[in-house]
Amino acid sequence: MTSDLSSERLTEWHGVPRVRLATLPTPLERGPLVGNGVRLWVKRDDLTGLGMGGNKARKLEFLCGDAVRNGARALITVGAGQSNHCRMTAAAGSLLGLETHLVLAGDRPDRLEGNQLLSDRFGAHMHFTGAGPSEWGVLEIAREALTDELAAQKLAPYSIPIGGSTHVGALGYVLAYDEIVEQCTSTGFTPGAIVFTSSSGGTHAGLVAGRAWRRALGLAHPPVIAIGVAKGVVAGFPSVEQLANEALHLAGLPGRVEAADVEVDARWLGADYAIATPESTDAADWAALTGAWVLDAVYTAKGMAGLLGNAADGRWASGDNVVWIHTGGQPEVFVHHD
Ligand SMILES: Cc1ncc(COP(=O)(O)O)c(C=O)c1O
Image 1 (cartoon, protein in one colour):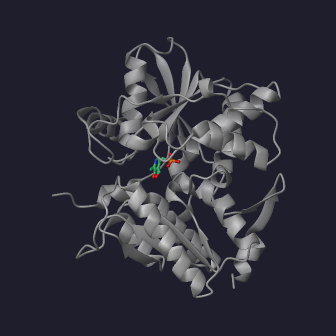
Image 2 (cartoon, rainbow, N blue to C red; image 1 turned 135 degrees about the horizontal axis):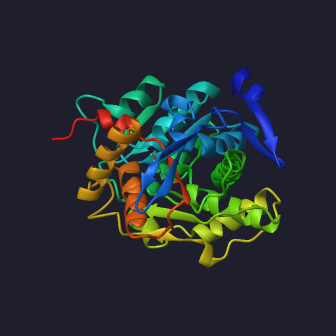
């Protein structure tokens, strides 16, 4: 049984169930000039509020809307040991009165830190698999097995794939794209690009779907550039184009995403997911000293390195405005690394 609170929060957007979890709209901050005189703007999606914020709050509004509408009594999801998505799902579960189970990479540590500490505080059950952080296949199989177990216990689980990257979750970033472009318009400019960090592809799918929707309506629709930080997404898995078109279809929105709309800049990943690069370390230092923006080593530091690298390469002209979405991840900063 979900709490009264969850039913109170249940709304709809274009006929699709949504629970309000995020503090929106998030601020758009004017940053410095970068590269050859490009104005940086930072969209503060690290300030979405839910369980210390981040991009997943927007996806979880639709995923949990689906769960609540379908009478789920538990949430299950999966991720790397320090998954932000898992921490925010735990926060959503706590808020909505849904028992939450997290299938995590790695082993249970002696002392919980960062996202795990917060997930524990939000009351989530953490299931450590021993899998490596990039072993998504192993993790997903473990999620499916746990889903079957909880279903057999009549817990009516709602099971969410890695990163919440389904067409349902992507709807959160369809709305975000529109929010960003409208904020820019009311500030007096149309951005030359919207740049952000991509890992499981759902944020990307939502953004390009939002762009296709606005394009179909004849509205301003700046390009979207994903900075890939996981091997899957830089290799084209999942299909961002397919997820995006499914999201448009689900909400009955006009527009179509084509392969040419999907750009993943793979040059900033380095050796692998969660392994810092010299550029990402420099970008995190630069952001802290320039805008007091706190970037995490796994996601946003590489995303910002990508933006700064593209600006330095002269991708945009002097006087252009570029929006970088800060997708969150700050709890990682408090994790002790040997
Ligand atoms: C801080 C942060 N930024 C970016 C992303 C990437 O989002 P997506 O998985 O939708 O590609 C994640 C995903 O876990 C994240 O936690």
